[in-house]
Image 1 (tube, rainbow, N blue to C red):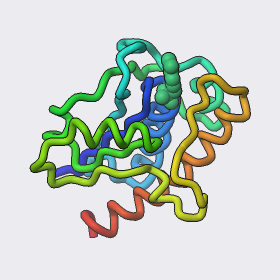
Image 2: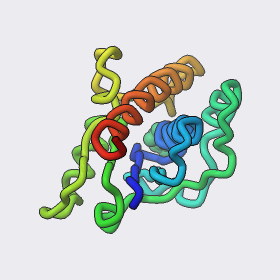
Image 3: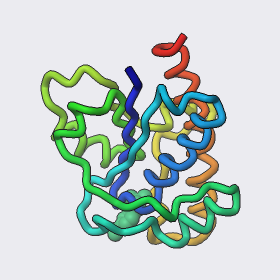
Length: 159
Ligand code: 4NP
């Protein structure tokens, strides 16, 4: 049986696709692709079916992550039946996810940066309306939190 991880942001075109691509890369590098499945989604519906934001694709490509094939989708209550980890980028995402979370959900719903305590921040900030430095910041935070999440899953489920 594999562990299933869903990353969630608002639009599913900036932060959560970055997390999907980076975490998948780390999982593959660790030889755990058969044990950990990864997806991403947005709480909003504006970008359904769209590729990630070009700024997100370009920033990730600088570090050899290929996000271009990803397509946005909206999160739904049914996702809680499938995913062991539902990981929110910010507190607004988390609030919206808590509102749709079934009462009997046994998995982990929480903030991504809880897995990067050295960041001393709770949220991966929305880069959509900001400048290019916001996209670099997102990628840095996502790389760090992905390492923490992978370590956590290995310790708690795969050891
Ligand atoms: P994301 O960024 O939640 O990281 O994908 C955003 C993308 C689009 C919008 C907001 C945030 N938007 O308002 O369309």
